[in-house]
Length: 170
Image 1 (cartoon, rainbow, N blue to C red):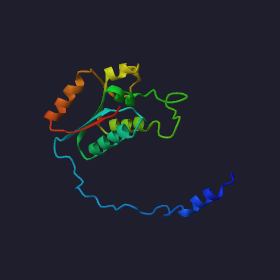
Image 2: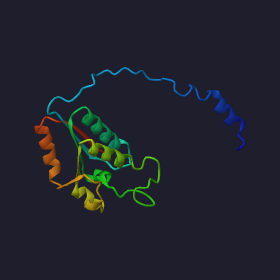
Image 3: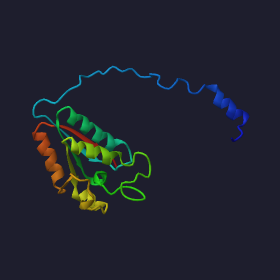
Image 4: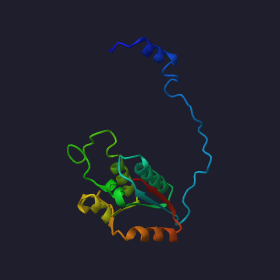
């Protein structure tokens, strides 16, 4: 082990670690809002313009859409711009499907779950083309869309009265 200086030892001993044992509650558990379930015909539409692994925004959006689906909403996620890269089945290193780091395929796996449970996933072809991604590289079940469909999809779901969750990240 590396030898520590007196100041390093002093710094380490100022506050005991861990300050709380594992499993300690530091947050309350009260849910403030009711656990809403979908009413007949309600829809939940998510737009994702964020790159996989650059932040948790894209992954959390898919988790939220999955939760809405499980609450009974007709749920769809639309990936466009750099968000289209989230829909690729060809990610991995050293070969496709292999995770070079823990969680590399979180979005892939969650999208497969979302699709299997009845959600719809749309992916903009133009977003794919901006990054040299091919349509045949999409996760099975992802619906490729025309660039002009982004706006019309929003109109479609707005007219249905859908809750629209729009995420945007550069």
